[in-house]
Image 1 (tube, rainbow, N blue to C red):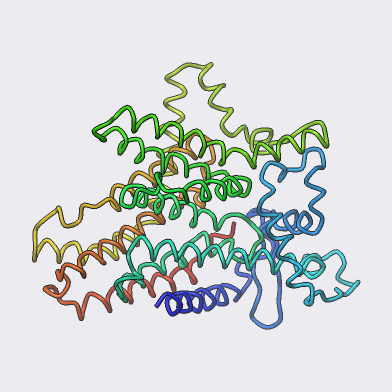
Image 2 (tube, rainbow, N blue to C red; image 1 turned 60 degrees about the horizontal axis):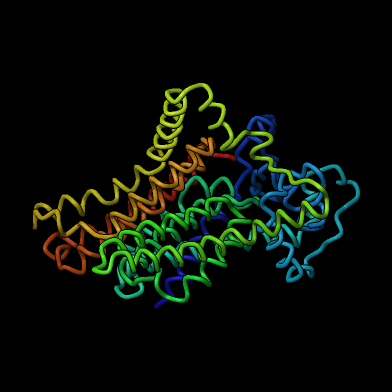
Length: 426
């Protein structure tokens, strides 16, 4: 069943992203406005490549350039190393670009084609892994459900995939990382993940993940908060808290180690280390300036940042409400019990989504694509609620023959809407 589901979602993903290649949809004269480069292919095909793509391609081709002073990707080299490691698999597709096209965008992509294919392969793998975590959270591997599977397809039909799946970029992690953190939260609560030896291997892997995308660091509060509550509630409270503290220190060290080693390596080799997010955009450090201006200024700006991200998220998350409403209404008509919907998944989705919005509000990165990090946990929650209603036989009491096809139609309709609507382009 695992293989069938992954194969099915892989086919759906391929169909969706192939349809995204009908274009480019953005007029050439607006490329600079949206920070994209249009790639024109034969026939009706083409797409808009994010303007960051060429640096990702160049660095995967020559990772040593990461050590160049002021390189804007120096602080997060992990994704580039992954693409560089994967690229030899695609060396066979290294065409010699026509010299007459030397100054064109297509020429550059053709020149770095093995690296481009490596990045796109990684994007697809990230989405498939994201769906795997969705399967685990919603128990879809134990309970076959067309409706739950359909809801999971919203992890494909969204603005982040539409804007970035054909570009070498890290934005697919805005889907994966929140789902991973939610899964970890649930595992700590339900299966005591924090107390098992595998937590150290996971933490070491997440340490590498932090060198790819900074929000992997939110894995720490995602496991520390529930583990601390569990320790506090133990009969031998202080013994449990002591064990928690020891494990927390080790886990923190494992997560921090790869980034720290990379920092020391760059400092040793070049004598400096450049953080583009701080140097150019003042991410995080803006808090110091706001604090100097007064506590009210700091709280006001943080609140505004959080609110703006919440609005961006709401504009992308309305489809979850639309999908879930018929099930919730039907549940209360037939059952009228709130407790049937309460679960660690509900707590986890609210906590993880809020945590991501708060994190980026503090960073000062206020973008629609960043706000999307609040959506995947609620997609997983919607899938889990439908699973619970099916498991408890509630949906059978409703008109299941109507609800399930309706869910599929809503999700497919949203996928078509996502394909046809104007933007986003970057």
